[in-house]
Image 1 (cartoon, one colour):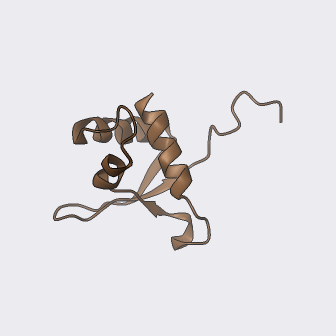
Image 2 (spheres, one colour):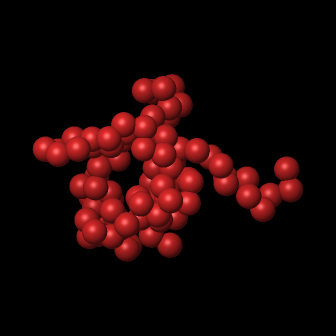
Length: 85
């Protein structure tokens, strides 16, 4: 459920016209949204890793230390899963 909530936050922030479709979402920014289940940094980290592992999100560029934030790419691989399109 936490990964799904995080994916919704990523999709809300997504703008295909900015930065070539890449987006950044810091852990602190996620905490500031105060979504249930996404309060602790460890939990947010696990949710990001789950999204990456399942193929929903790819890390386009690694941020690293000292407050740098990863750049993410949404794959949209499963957005139409279960629909009759």
